[in-house]
Length: 172
Image (cartoon, rainbow, N blue to C red; front, side, top):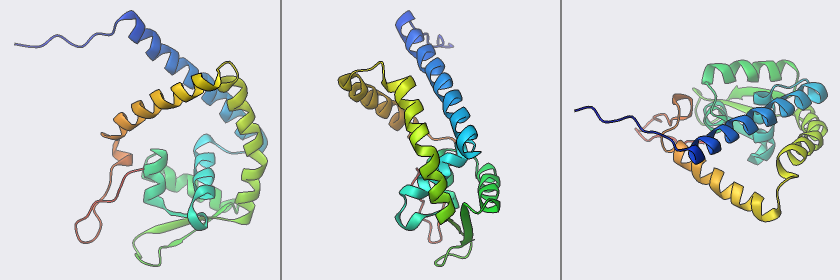
């Protein structure tokens, strides 16, 4: 006997659609600011910001793809574009010649410094301004739990791969 498909009540639907709409509105504004100030796509900004936070400004391509939940081939294209602009350099990993390491350049770090204040301003104006400090803490907790739940079954681009010796890499 087939089971009934799950349903959402009015509150659940409201929460879902509010999240989708708020995410879309915020993403559009953020993408516009990044394009206007730094000629960057959102994914390119994510790469630069992730590298900016990484020890030595470097990460493996596969780890970057896992962290930003983006296809590996798409991320390779984005990294090539950033490399052509002199914002990152790509090189074979010293400890595994099959892996590629991406490193933020001084020019990449400088561009991050240019776009970050406006990026933070957009996030503050659109997302955080109407919320109290307690609201932001609650939102961070709720979205963090939802993200962690979703990451338990990540998309293919964010799944761990087998390393030599049969161990899987960690995701994001």
